[in-house]
Amino acid sequence: MTAGTPLLAIHGLTAAYGKIIALKGVDLEVHAGEIVALIGANGAGKSTLMMSVFGRPRARSGRIEFDGHDITHTPTHHLARLRIAQSPEGRRIFPRMTVAENLQMGADAAQASEADRAADLERVLTLFPRLRERLTQRGGTLSGGEQQMLAIGRALMMRPRLLMLDEPSLGLAPLITRQIFDAIRTLNRQDGLTVLIVEQNANHALRLAHRGYVMVNGLITLSGGGTELLQRPEIRAAYLEGGRHGT
Image 1 (spheres, rainbow, N blue to C red):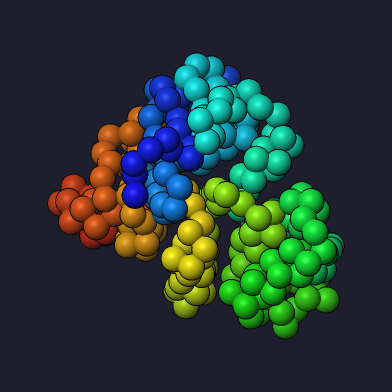
Image 2: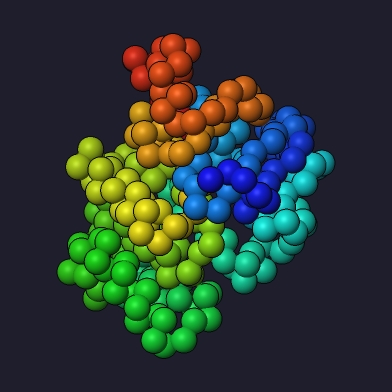
């Protein structure tokens, strides 16, 4: 699965918030058709790495490539044209818009045909039946789990080649978390969707992922198959046996 040019390749990336260095020469690859998980303790730099793809913060050095092309300094609004979609931490839906209108925002970014929009909407509503029941409801009135489904659904309406998920299970009940992870697995298996996921729940993330990376203080310290990492004693001690589950 990892042969050939990566869909997303990050080489020697450094980034900072003012004088605070958040990323210290990070290397990471995501190949087409993979689910890749990035785990680590609170403040390790995981969300910063994901956001750096969108230029927030901008790279100080290093390179970000998508499908073999340098996108390190590509304006954020151009990334949608490359079909890179994000469901950010905190969901960031439009609370005063209805569920249908939020999903339409994703479709508008994709500039798809009406037939494709209809097919994409049906796929999202099949994955997340609760959204079908709440199409006319304002986003801000949804539960946390429903808002997360909406944020992912909006990203899917962009017809992504790469879906980037930042803490999709944060603050959610276990049943809702399972539904969301099952949906991600279905999208990958049925549609071959490529996914990069930053996740506080290392157990869920590594069981879902083909490969994983561990980040500590702005550096990648371990990488390997998801199952392989789950079995490593240092991973179990830090993240699965009462250790900290950081963001």
